[in-house]
Length: 216
Length: 216
DNA sequence: GGGTGCAGGATTGTCAACAATTTTGTTTGC
DNA sequence: GCAAACAAAATTGTTGACAATCCTGCACCC
Image 1 (cartoon, chains in turn yellow, cyan, green, red):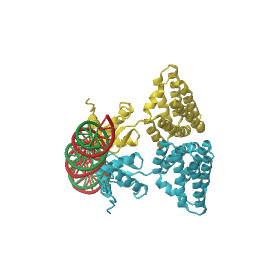
Image 2 (cartoon, chains in turn orange, blue, purple, yellow):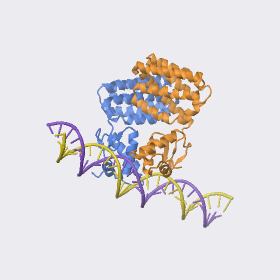
Image 3 (spheres, protein in one colour):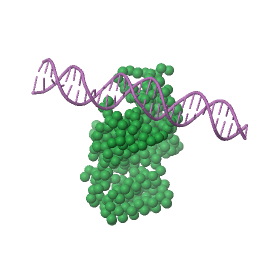
Image 4 (cartoon, chains in turn red, yellow, brown, green):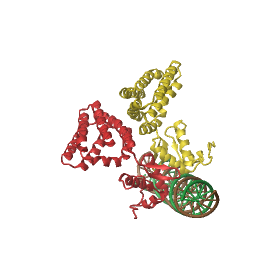
């Protein structure tokens, strides 16, 4: 029970609580719609309620928790419709990033993309969906990073955080990696060809496919 | 000096402070890069420091203020490059909204768009840039609203809040209304034609124009 | 003369106690 | 047996004080 890992030293209490709570939610250790009582969290993390409070306010505006006046906080449940709406936003924003990455990436960075693509092909051939899922995230993260579009990157990271639960569900579906591999390779090819138009189209096609899969 | 307008009654202190501070920043009453000392704000708004603190944390994640550990808060200055990046994100997100609005809007709502378009034409003809600017915001807000894309709406409102200063600058530039009027009318026409593809293209063309204007 | 170390002041970060609000369980009346 | 009112418990919102941290200016030493 004493999970107060490191009340440690100079580590600012609020940041500590924030990081702990965010990780716990992202790892799915908090059941969906679970009540988050400030006192309990404070004791659990070894910080005071004020720090927990500050962390909750921050997580609220990240869309990870829901706070109702005088009623408390709970982890936000993302419905299927919301997941679709979020992915639609991802679609256009990642499209933008891909188009910019096609123009702005260095040759070394393009090589990196190709390597990830090869690793993805291998993961599918070997039937390793978990490895493939990790590479999937890595690929999207690299494209974001190479775009140099800081605003879009921040928005996308916020959106992605809200999707953890749905994403896990999707990654382990049989046949899904085979389908998305081609889309991913098309994205990589368009970017390495330095064709922003094609890159945006490829990314949007891919995420349109994800939306279809989400809807089942 | 006693600006403590309404310490009023049940109005929760934090929300009060938050609303006051946000308005003050959006109205430009706070100089760019001005230091925001928690004690001063608390006294000015008639609330306690804790409430101001909570409000500042929230405004930070909205991108309106900047907070540095143990160093305090200041209103965030949006550079020209950032304004361009933000507008690029607006471009793709509003494109998405326009496409969805073209499909989802009711006939009454389409009529509303046409009326705003006529008012804009009149404002330009009469040489009233302020009226035109207001109608401009109204048009964009209506399109967002009609899309039914809640996630995109929230992201866009957050982004727009960061641009207040730059927007004012842009609206009063001579010749600007004449140029953007055509783009706006094209957006309205595409949406009323219920053509999502054309609507997205028109919105993106318009905001690409805004980006060019931002760069001067 | 310039850089370094050291108080002094100011500001943020943290804490524990208090007040206000909501929810829940119980009781009472019909 | 059911509904409404009431009371008690739990939880959040707020307050003021205290501790930690950082910048400023100045003296001091190299």
